[in-house]
Image (tube, rainbow, N blue to C red; front, side, top):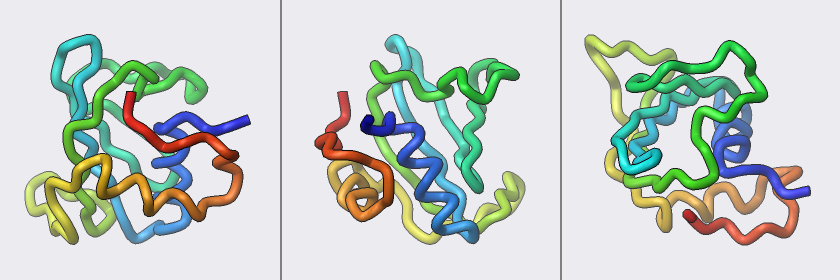
Length: 108
């Protein structure tokens, strides 16, 4: 079974534990920012469920940009590695991950 986009991004951060992903997205027409670090996701704009199986980035979300930062995340002094990466630019970086199945990586 193919992994969701959120799970693929979480897997990326497990494989790159020195990085934090800050994902800008639209969820149900509302802007959101999701912080992903060492396999865990948390919304900075909406409540995050206590259940780790409850998706923070739903399948209908539209990713508008991804920033790569040095971890751990320090909101008062973030250190950016790359900023404003489009989904089309970032998704090929996920292609080599184990367990992503044969799903085409497209943004809904």
